[in-house]
Amino acid sequence: MLRSESADADQIGRAIPLSFPKPYADGVARLRVPGGFILLIAFAWLAHPSPASIAAGLPVAGVGLAIRAWAAGHLEKNQTLATGGPYAWVRNPLYIGTLIAAAGFVIAARSWILAALFAAVFLLVYLPVVELEEQHLRTLFPQYAAYAQRVPSFLPRGRFGGSGGRFALRRYLRNEEYLAALGALLGTAWLLLRLFWF
Image (cartoon, rainbow, N blue to C red):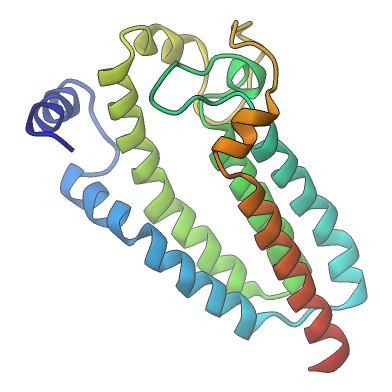
């Protein structure tokens, strides 16, 4: 981040009260990728699936992945403010999709410890990161403040009616959302291995 961008973000942080202290949010933002690897290891270790848990969890995970894909096909990162597609309903559809997909895999894995771990990571890591990203969007897009007043962060309460255009496969590919689908396939394969061979 450039010094001027950092100063802008600090000014915005003072103007908009955060739920998490900014130094904490900055710290956990740096831990998001290493934390993801820890979650993968926990998932691999703690998963004890059954045929019923897999049948219940994978469709939920599929819904989360579909929401992420829909959002990625409307997103032009740092170029235009996404207000169409799922962004007309909520400001953070990618995170909602991640939460639903994770919930699906936790159901499939049949582990309360894993459920508690995923919930803690979402509350203590992802929510502060969402706040940092919203600060960044406010610096990039002057219209973001008005958008944020009309569209809720996570729980939809009606459609805002944004004009962000249609889903575009090129945006989906540019945002590398297919990696989430690949990760889901690997997670599913691991669950099946645990079910039948471990």
